[in-house]
Length: 311
Image (cartoon, rainbow, N blue to C red):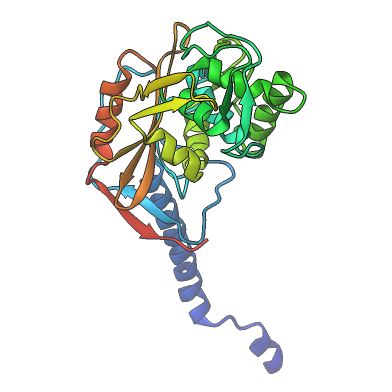
């Protein structure tokens, strides 16, 4: 009986430490969720999947305030970590307008070299053009400048039509690229962004796309150029190009692309250098894309701190 009593005797410390362990566990969970809530407030979203580079650091806005903007959809994203710092209707689907040309450039760079000579297959006078003529020959690099600075639709068409198997094959490749980059709410129907009911994206997808685009040195250089004079390969046709991004060069702005159609409204995708890091800002369906973007620039300018993270 004595042995039986010893086996069934419960130590008093059990009743003391068990509730303590449970309490500490609950406190740890509470702190974890509080930290996540602090990082991702009610108007912020995490990219899916959430993947960061080994050098990534988590950005945090030091002093938060909610800017009043006209854009129906907007986002601020850290390009490296893909952390969202601010958002307004980040998953709102809308026409891409000419920001589709960012994907056109990224897709084309997978196939063409800058020195490749492309031939204009047909004259395109729809929307913004520089006036390329049929059978005109121009380097791929110069067509990129024409497409990304004054947003020339004829340059975008020429690039797509010179792709193997033609324009439709190129558009299919654009959509393939969208899936590869996990742009789940994005679709393209043409290379210029003219098909409002077929070209669509969201602020989140557009920011994610831009974050990959500016990693390409060729795109980064071109979208950061204010003015450029280009010619065809013979030097006969000369074109003076001007970047449509009025904010370029101000407040650390280094690019990226404007867009406008009646359906899309005013669209602007912006890259900004802040503390040596690239920040992406997107406004869609805006009444004043430059004023809206300036307010979002003010939100992050001298207002970010970066914490080291270990994936």
